[in-house]
Image 1: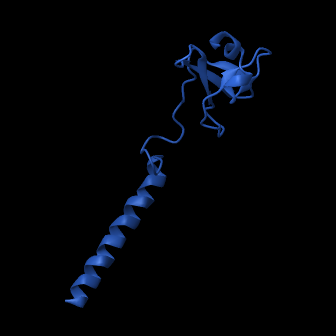
Image 2: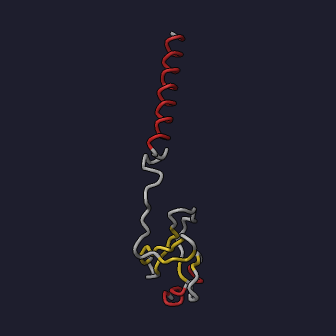
Image 3: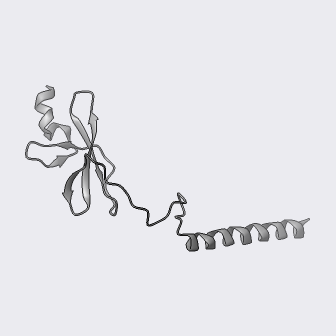
Length: 104
């Protein structure tokens, strides 16, 4: 019984190793099985704020303030809601946003 279970486990490990090796030749990613070099589309309403970094409007919050989220096809960005300040910067604290004075 132990030999049978050991052989089955070895077979599962072998199958898993072979399927992972195939990933490298197909160009698929481990998580989504999408090509790693697939073109990522920048949203049409994206606002450029740096080299390959954009702010994308998400729509208004409950007080009518436009919410934004950072986006980059090549860089890591913080996944937080941000608001635009009077001077054009993007801030996480809504009290510092241009719309904060309008919402009161």
